[in-house]
Length: 465
Image (cartoon, rainbow, N blue to C red; front, side, top):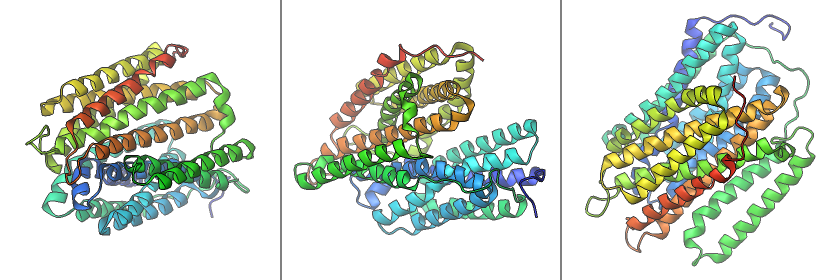
């Protein structure tokens, strides 16, 4: 039996390939909703606000699962936790594939969110069983395959949904996830836990943060119906505030908090969190609005694009996002974080302003979306890097988890605001929002993003490596 004192068993190319196939399948499953969201809204009779909620549920679950998965991986071994989380992801994919209505589909997406916590565990497993140089190469390959899977899912979801059905666009990548999980389970050796003894889990903090994020999304989804359901909306606001207050109190007192709020007192950390939030709000609004504008009927202001066409239109943005990480890392190393974030914010504001003013041709949206994806990637990479290097090595995980939570909240708020705008601007008896809602959405996103410049100018330039 392998113990924590035994040297780790080396793995071969077949095991690394199995992990890569798992990343490829997971990336494909994660990406099928965005290009087909207008189709899902039509088939499931969703409002734009409900569609926005569907688009971010997976991300919220992932933010909650990730820190728990890391601690469990330390306690029980990375492979053991990875396989179990992928079983949850597979169950979520099957639920999504069989979903007859929106509530069941939301449940499936909640379960699929476990993939966000599972992928870092695969990196840990690879790193544990390979020498440092080979591990870096393997992690790069796995990361690249995940991005490639996302692009494949973006391109294939539309044709599959339109040729077969929306059920199959979830079922096919889920089958790939199940097969690659079984393969990884057979080829990866057992890895011993890196820590012995009891791992403290902040279950109270996890529950309260889950409640706060869930009720916040419901509040934003109900904003367009505030006039007809004021008591429900008011009650949800009160419940959200209670969850936030309770979570803050618990995290301040917890011996091993899920998110160490005391670290927010450091200027470098709170500035990074605020910047991440406002930048992700602007990005998420655009990510939600652009496919909706592509799908709008041609007899008005839209392009009547099918799910297949939307997937092709979104592909350049996915490519730009995949390039943004390496470019952001190189830029931060050479020039520091402040110039990179400033360039990213200015680029994003320019793209959002241009989309508000001109969106009469498909290439306007394709080019604008690609610029926004590139700018967001530059900003987030620079902010994560500056956060990680501004604290002691032992505090890196805690500091970056704060940025992760604010990133998720920013994406969720932006998508829900976009959905609320379109829902409020949709006339009774119609499924098509007014064009002014898109213009307003891009303008608001640009204004929110521009506010980041007030803080960006106060950042330290950053350490050159």
